[in-house]
Length: 328
Image (cartoon, rainbow, N blue to C red; front, side, top):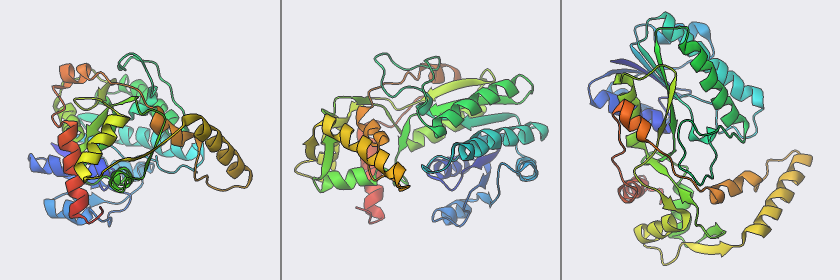
């Protein structure tokens, strides 16, 4: 393949680009910042990096020229204070702009990275691709709409389009979980509630392999696939695992849920009035409320993909990377 990876300097995009090169593909990467800390590793591996805006039709046309497959990971997602139209411009309009340019340039397959967040984060039944859409913020809403727009476009083009809905990815290169690791190591993690909710994580290398497997699979165009790890855990069990890995005598302390719900609501509403970013908000508690397991059987059946890295191995490899980088 001659593969275009958007978001190539990000956490998942960089691992995908490196894995694609490793197995013999020619890779072009688009990054918001091609001078990011991980960029030298990409260029040393042979990834050609381009800087540009995927919402610009002219740039999208140039970037997809000569490309056989596209893995589209670039997105607006961390900008919590950004208006809804920012997410729409990047995640919906940008995705369609890139897909149209790819189709015009004869790209064979376009694999779009959506999010498992389009589904509810609490469900008694295993979540499948046809489970109800339940978005809670502008980012998730934009991802759900981008999926719908791509399904419409799939009916108009011979380019095959797949949509991946990955679970929460972690692994070497991920800074988001660093605070969790470090606070457990120091015995300072605040567990709100019982920690009994299930969570279903995904090691980043398994996600990279899912993208490559999709590129090469014979999937029905416009279909979505859930991508998740081989096992679930509860938050409390996860904290116990991290206790053991980091050598901590305890993970932290427990906090009743009701007072935190009240405090989060008060702080968020007050900060909205004074136009400040809240240090604590209602969405903070979503981390503690997660209780879900994802069904990956459709991805296994159609894409020929299966997660390989278990949670114990994945957490250890993540911790080793933090230590190598002197982050913990």
